[in-house]
Length: 362
Image 1 (cartoon, rainbow, N blue to C red):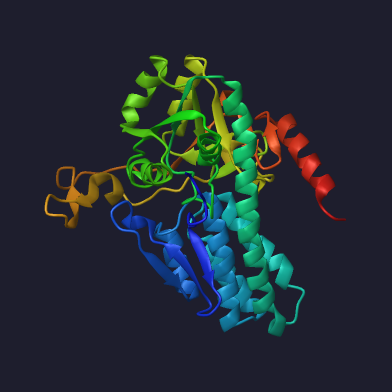
Image 2: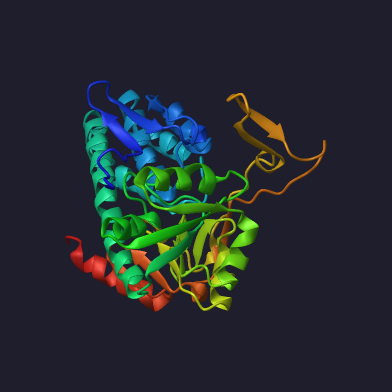
């Protein structure tokens, strides 16, 4: 039986007064929690991808800023710590959003009150993320149920499960809900080179939850879609523009094109915090470029059970390593959010914005 009781990627230790996160760089071979007890530790965890996934990056940064304020709650350090955290990953919208949430809460206060208020806000954001992701799962389940398949074959890309949030996830939340409701579900997990988040994280998650899944090479996904072995594609988003363009892990765009060519729905699951209302289109989204070593080598266990890095390419080879790509809004069948399912276009997002504006206190 699937349960989220123990499926949590970030926890707060009120006794030690530290944040504990799963070191995702060690998965799927080793499950290890590590403590983040200084601003530098938070920055390092985000930049090295010990934590990753737009919602989790945001929550982690919120706790990081709260930690920085326990050391120095001055205006200067508030600005300095926020800038340091913001620089760790340039693409994920939730990072800036979460830092702004903390800053707006504490900036009017006397420095002596800032640390405690920042921590309280970070804890609230954490709980809010859990609730929002479960709502995404419920809303996405409506779309999956409407496909009316005896066995539903879903393709996903990268990792947008509870490892990318606090619990439930975004793209995987509807899958977990479908499985819990007794639907027969099978997931095609694309490996997601070069960091293999599909292989290392998504498949690991799904196995733990008892959801049937199969790892496939990235290059095989178009063929599986063309052969009608895929009923829908669901991915997450690191930043969504105001016109509905979606920025997600590189390789997402190719799946969207294949889905359109074969007339199957391509869904994107995301919390509202991932929408960048100041970004007119995907053309304005900064694309993070990571170290070429991620492409030129690969890590894993050898036959003796030891972990090591293996070089894949010839000496002196060069590589380009963009971490994300942009999928145009017209390729997206629906945006699955905590507020409901919306058309991926400016009008659809404005409808979402008007609904949420009505719910916020004046």
